[in-house]
Image (cartoon, rainbow, N blue to C red; front, side, top):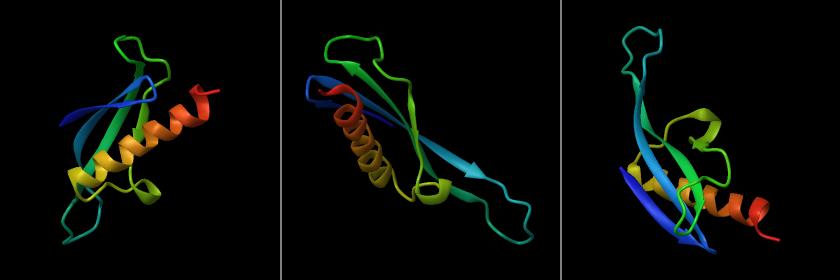
Length: 87
């Protein structure tokens, strides 16, 4: 799933990825969830202004839902703009 958000003259592109991890434990289901890749560009442009940001949950775990992933990734994009791109 992909979403675009406008923020302070920038475009935050969020691409959600489903992930599964097989851990070497007996009789346990694999971990499954979602991560995201955030790309920030100027509005109307296609060249990223920062490197891609990879977003996962606490302690590197996967997010449980797409909605949680979209919210966290969108917020991460806004923080990057506020901290690194705005004077």
